[in-house]
Length: 215
Image 1: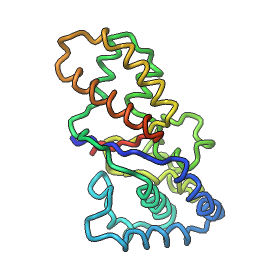
Image 2 (image 1 turned 30 degrees about the vertical axis):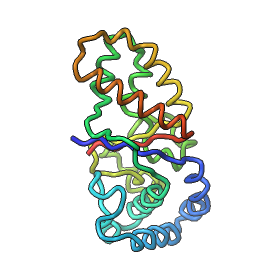
Image 3 (image 1 turned 120 degrees about the horizontal axis):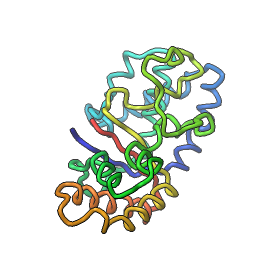
């Protein structure tokens, strides 16, 4: 299992895709697909930032309809991602969340830390009553063209999500306050704790959201 974290300029991304989403909401996916195609074509083979992380640039030539539109928005999202300045490949926030559950964290905070917001909610947060929820894979609404934005995620990743700056700030403060509760002999959990705190602190200093993919 490989955990990869990216810094995300959320506001710039949202502004850049707003006109494309206006067209997509009318059922016109031409502009977003064209921009995604041009961007991937400008990269060398296998050079896409998200290549192999539960998705592949090859999907651009195999998907159709709302699936293609959602994938195209994921491609355009990747233009606003920056790799973490340090290795997070051995990070496992799930195990950290288990340790924090024993330290008395409430379920809501554990869920936010462990899963983050669903990536498609970066497109339509106002249409996400529960941003942490993921649609059931068997939900027939996946096939509704109005739900093209559901497909804006690496579909074959084990997990993926994101946190905004305010969530990172709140979580980091709670993590710092919980350090003593983890004890001194939690093995890998302390390593995950240190890496998570460092990762969140880095994003906050740069005023960036964080997006992660586990593949």
